[in-house]
Length: 290
Length: 345
Image (tube, rainbow over all chains, first blue to last red; front, side, top):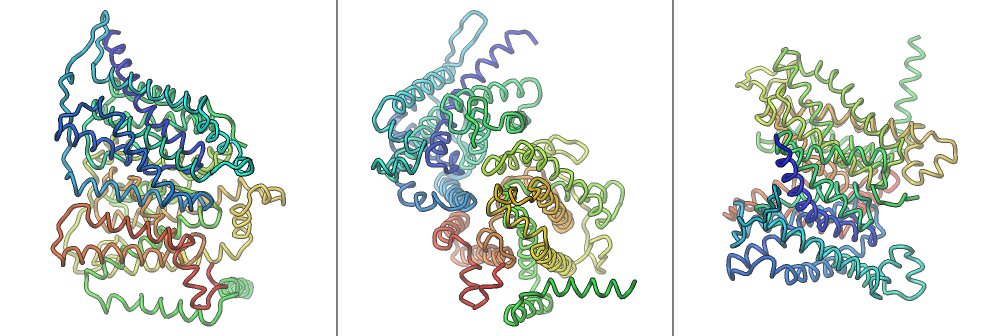
């Protein structure tokens, strides 16, 4: 195979990987602060994907325009979820948190199935088949837009956590729970905000994913697992780690799909996960947990 | 020699029954008697439901050894079911080797698999959520691997020959539901006894110490690595038998189904709903969950609701309700209510 083919597939994998990274960023932010593993992460993404599909089919609203409104909807959803359901579970054993979110995931998947049926849905934008050519490199327009939007969204989140007062307060909660309570932070509210931000991330990622893949109600669990793989590869709780992990996994999947068979591609992602857990359990950019 | 054996057996029985009140012993005997008589009392449909319940009681108990006793959260138990099922079914289909020899082959393979996962994880101190996700990763790896493994027909699935059986052939596990029922009942009773013995012995106390506080356990001189390994290996061995049973009961195996994360989740729902770490929890949980699923099924059919997914939504809502209302599971509060508090484990 000529080198061009590899390069094209690799670049396409990196662009998809950026969207994966944004999705995983949501999981990472939630775990890093609330210490709850969101086992309904991919399912929350599928809600955003269906919102985009419905808005496009009904009102011809372009997914890229609906990016912020839909992630705002997911933000509210995440906030309510944390306040109503998850807050009481923060101090309970991990397996009860797991069951709570698995139950939620089952409800989401099957509600979508009831409403939309099992068939795959797509969004046919006017630029679906556009591409840009750079020398021998051909870039799919939808993937390029999705990747660029993912970078912008992630950068905005970095800035928020780094410089805003609320972002600093949230990081204080993550660093020292008791200390945060002592200085008078409203931890429950900040946890809910964090979960909401994580949900907004995965919502934005979901909208961009509709440009790249078809949507079915059962798509959720696959992406939940993928988000785990990415987050642990990059380092659970590390924000740049999630993006780097996403790019790495996107690249691996794309190349594995080219060199072997596409159906076996996620085996390589899981293979990477096993290697990372064994030799660098804290992830590529993670800090060693005590 | 014989005296020694008798004395040893007596000690074993004493350990098994020690601390058991008359009330809970009576309850156990009554339940066992009811289960023994069940095939003569219920129709084939209900018998199949009972088989599924006992299957989940068995696998739940096996999972409970790892999580409930030793505190190691495995979310990938489907890998042991799948390995056991595929190994025994392949031996049967290709070489006509019976399922009981299949069990003898499946157990060492599952133990080695569990040992590899355990060794890698515990050596590198991968714990908690990370360990749980490592177990998912291995199960998913196996799922996709088997999906491309031509020796076992890859994603086309492996099928066992089926026919109408007039006579039950226990040796080859070919027969009617009643035979399968007694096989899984015997297995459930055996693992219940095994778990009770383990809990009442040195290894069980070490496990509980590790579960409650691993550092403290290590400080008191317990070789935590070794005892966590024992937990994984025993749990894997027990679960692989369930795989053999699954293969011969359903007569078909698809990688997408047996290794799926949903199979792993199904296995752990029973003990969590029933009560993690209790001996009776997995059994009660299996009854509650399978009973719930079947009731929902027949209710929806009776109401004429034919929506794909409707049943699962109700199921999810019920799970949510139970976990919010009864975080310890159903059995511990029920045991207190029945005055069996001391026997809840």
